[in-house]
Image (tube, rainbow, N blue to C red; front, side, top):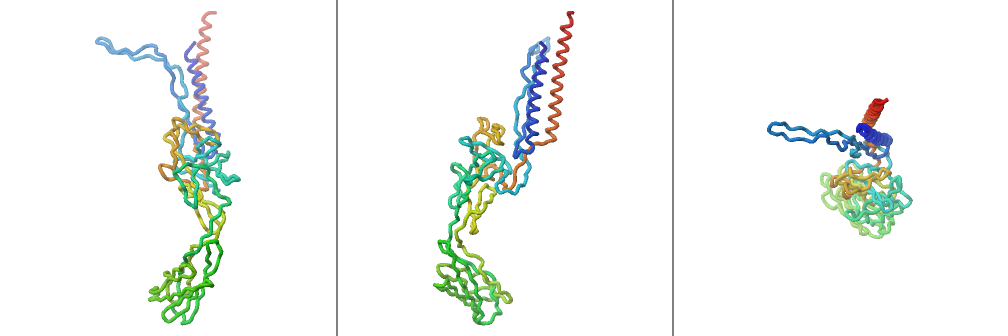
Length: 389
C-alpha cells in the first residue's frame, strides 16, 4: 500500500486534534481565568531508503534519503498569560495580578486555580463555585500565623471584637485668646471600661488671667491642669489624668477668634460584631466590626510552580500538580515572585478570538489537504488495478 495513505490519515488525526483544541478555546472564551491551549505538531519516524556515505579520495559523500511517514501531535501547551481584569464589585471576587494560583481543597484532593469567583458557605468558609474550600492561614487575635501549615479560610461570622478600656484621650483645636476671665467652655468625651460600658468625662475650661484652667471629672474623681499660651502656642501644662485615663492637650492652641477645642480621639471601644471584610494586596482578609475596629481574620495562600505548563487540568477551572510541574511553592501575594491580589475583580479568559478563528481556518485547510492526499492515493491505486482488465 502507498505510504501516502497513512501519512494522510495521520494528518487527518492531527488536524482533528487541532480543531478540538481550538474549539475548546472558543467555547471557553467567557470562562473566568481560562487559559487557552495550543497544539504542537512534529513529524513521525522517517523510513531510510539510502544511508549517508562519507567522502572518499575519488568519490564525494552522499546524503541520506528518507521518506517521512506522517505527522503526530507532539503536545498541547497551555498559555498562562495574564487575562484582562473585569470589575465585579463583589468583595468575595478576587483576581491574581501576576503569577500564582489559589490553593483549594476538595475532599482530600489539593487543587490549584486562577479563578477567584468565590462565595461564603453556611459555615463562613470561602469556597469556589464547585464547593472546593480556599486554603490559607488563620489569624489569632488579629495576628496571621503564616508560614505554617495551610488550612480552610473561614470568616468568623459570629466573631466578636472585644471591648477595650480607655486609657488615653487627646484634645485638639483652639481656645479663644480674647475670651474674658471667667469664661467657661464645657466639653464631654465618651469613654469605656474593660466590659465595654460607656461613661462620660466632662472637661471644663475656665479662662484665667494666665491662660485656661482645666477641670476634668468622671463623676467620682477629678483632675486639674493649667494651660498657658505664648503667641498662641502652649507653653505650660497640657496633660490631665482622671479615673486612670490620661488626656493629652498638647495640641491645643490659644489664638484669638477661634473656639474649636474638642476631643480628637480616645483609644477605648465597646464590643462589636463582624459586619464586612476587605482584601489587602497581600491576601490578608481584614474584618470590619460594628465598634469601628478592624483586624485580620486570615490570609489567602498562593502557590507557584517551577513549570506551570506541567500542571494537569482537573476540570472546574482547576489544575493538579504533576511530576513535571514540580511541587507547589506556597507564599503570600506580592512576595517570592507571586502576584498581588485585587478584590472586587476577576481575571477574564486569555483566549484571543482573532487568533482562534485563524487557527480554525488553518486546521480546516490542513484537514482538507490531508483528505486530498488520501483521495489522490486512492486514484493512483485505482489506476494500478486498472492496468489489468
